[in-house]
Image (cartoon, rainbow, N blue to C red; front, side, top):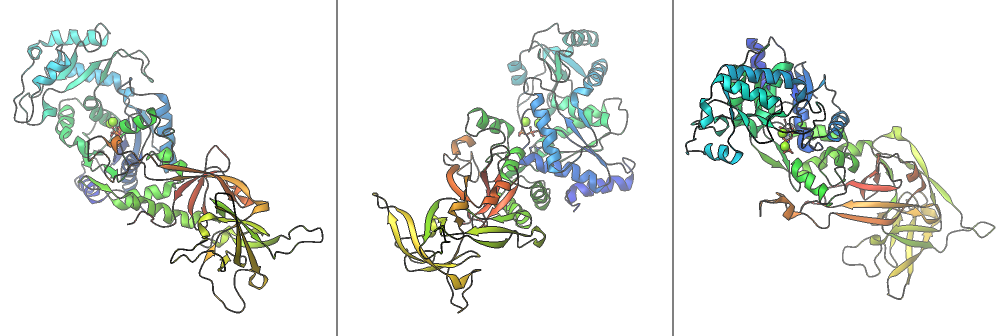
Length: 553
Ligand code: ATP
Ligand code: MG
Ligand code: MG
């Protein structure tokens, strides 16, 4: 169970433990920025961060990386914490980068005093142009030669709120000719007069990711700071800051691993936020979204998401995983846990002409005991009514059966699952020529679904007794994007949106016990797939996943 960290992370930690770098301590953190909802990529990071700590008997904090008040808000904080809990992880503590603003500021003063940081009041464009590029020399800012006294004074005034947004920044004084652009005097503080959800109006300046991250790790006692590959080039800066500060304890180590990407979807909060803002989806929790909220509403069990993240392992090569891999973990889990129910999604009335009636002329009702889950006998059985009028799937009947169609047609005998053999005899059609009703006869000797004379049928169909049926709505989902790598063509993933990613069936019919399915519970609709009851709307079901991989070519 504890194989979250694949070898290169575990190897590095084992080595540290052998030489005693951190006195056998292992501490990690999961550092989401509260500027959106968590997605499947974050699930990967969570399983790596928490899984690694667990594997080595260490601790893992959640640190809200709240350094940009403009993009962040408490709604996101709340959802992030709830989604981590849903995924099944318990943070050692929940902390905020903003908890460390005062300490970070003092360390910034310290670097200024050491002559290692300066205030630059050129505009953003100039600073960025002077940074140069790979093979292109950087140009030192004229502000680089300011005295310590001048820099301290300016920093104090930045902190006191004397300057407008964008008027100046604090930069580390490192190396404007470094081959690593990150090291060309990176920005440490920006001015931003905005109310922060934790610190209110206490701070008019906010640390950049680079200035906040490693220092926050050090303050908390993080030993191994696991992050995604795009921070690889930031590692020298991560180390530079830590090496130049009077740390309270050991210097943490950053280790990078590949981001998780999945086919047919995007894992970027910015793009997901745009889908929400543009109304392409109903919200962050739309069942088509790769957010943890969306997956949960769709019926993905947390255990399946965890198992998938563990199974794909941790690498240092970015690659896109097939979404079918995730779906097969979902199916595997639900096959064990989901009770079976019969629901007809596109109903067609089936009338059994030789069905018996009672002394008042009303059709008899025959009750069958049906197994709830053949994979789990403990789930027991339920009683399902059968009578003279039923609903079957429209697709299960063909007036003119095409080749290899073995389901119901005139003169053909099929099994109604667990009940009887029936043979279609005639149809009723409307003016448009569409079949509105199929008439049939049943064989009383086949009760339970087998013929005593041993004769076979080629097809078994699900059904619902019309008199006992409850109305159900069913949402069927397609891929949200039409291509495995959205954006590959034009650079913009949203160009590859699938315009037909949801189909709502509003007159589905379910057996009566469908009323007892709890919000968020997943059941298997026989022959159709796994379906999750909506969290809010009764009798609305989202198709989680089909019974088998229908996408395979
Ligand atoms: P986005 O680009 O979606 O905004 P982010 O990396 O900015 O993602 P954060 O909230 O900063 O989002 O991420 C928190 C943690 O989750 C970071 O350590 C980050 O590396 C990790 N993470 C984010 N996306 C992925 C992903 N697709 N695969 C693995 N880890 C991820
Ligand atoms: Mg980030
Ligand atoms: Mg981001």
